[in-house]
Every structure is written in structure tokens, then in C-alpha cells.
Image (cartoon, rainbow over all chains, first blue to last red):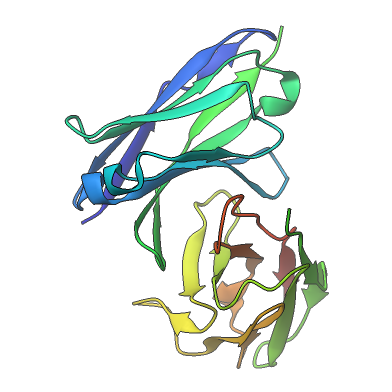
Length: 119
Length: 106
């Protein structure tokens, strides 16, 4: 069974930083792309970014709204993906979901972790 | 970047009705389109990928069609448990943009 468990969410002040983790199990983590998606309360889904697998040189891509502030990384030895968030703004307040793409047409989601940016 | 639009933004239908939601991409995305169902307070659930491939465990009343720029999600006979917001998402290339969602009520 595919499991994705996000952690690291919480309350942070504007301008601060936070690092989310996504612990994965039940599938070939090293062969999978990993994404982050967020959803502000009462709003739609927003794709944040993704990191590809080793075969694709761990290529990353980001939404324009977070480019230059957020960084996605992964540690295949720990089956874990990360989302480093810097220069956080109130508009970054959302539930952050970790999503795996083990093959091109399959996506599995974690339960999400809440990030609140507020003074 | 390719933009994704959905119509309608919301709809209300009766149990047993046939419901169709449209998703349009601003440029061609082949068949790299997914549909998600999200119930209030829940994690999005993947219904369909590759525009028309029903995921395991998803009721057969759901179907998807289309390619290129125009796609549809059809619920052949709406059930009370289908009350949710439905999102399309392109995944042909980054950014993997979502549509704004369609809220379905009964």
C-alpha cells in the first residue's frame, strides 16, 4: 500500500522559513517523481513543484508563485522528499500535500500538513 | 504557460441525472489529463488519468473523454455521494496546472 506522510507544518511568521518532509513507503520511491500541491482554505488546488527521479537527473520545476523561494529535494536512501520554503508570505498559508507519480499516469496523495503564515 | 479552464464553475442536479463537466487547455496537451474528486475536508481522489482511464475502485458511472485541448468528465447517473468539487489537471509538462474546479451539488 502506498503511504505518504507529510510532516513539518506549523505556524511561521511572514518572512520566515519552514521545511516540510514527506516520508514514503509501499512503492519504488527512487523511481518516482515527487510533487507538492497546496490548497488554501476554501480555495482550489495549486501545483507547487516537482522533482524527478535519478534517471531524469533529479530535475525540478516550480510554479511561478514560489519560484526562487521554495526548493524541492529528495533523499532516496531515506525514501523522503522535502519542500524548503523561504521568505514565506501570508498567501502561502495552505494545506501542503505530497504527491507521488510512480509512473506517468498514476498519482498518489498524502494526507497533507497545514502551514500557517501569520504574525 | 498553458492555462486550464473548467465549466461550469458550479452546478446543481438531481439524483440520477447525467452530469458533464468540461475542461479546456489553452494549448494542446495530448491525453495528459487527470480528473480528481474532492469532498469537503478530504484529500483529492484521482478518478481518471490519461483523459479516459478509470482508476481502480472508481464507480463505472464516471467516465472521461477528450484529447488535445477539450476534455469532459461525465457522471452518467448522479448519486448523493458524488457531491464534491471536481478538478482537472494537466500533466504533459511542468507546471502541472489544475483547473479552478467545478462544485457539484444535489
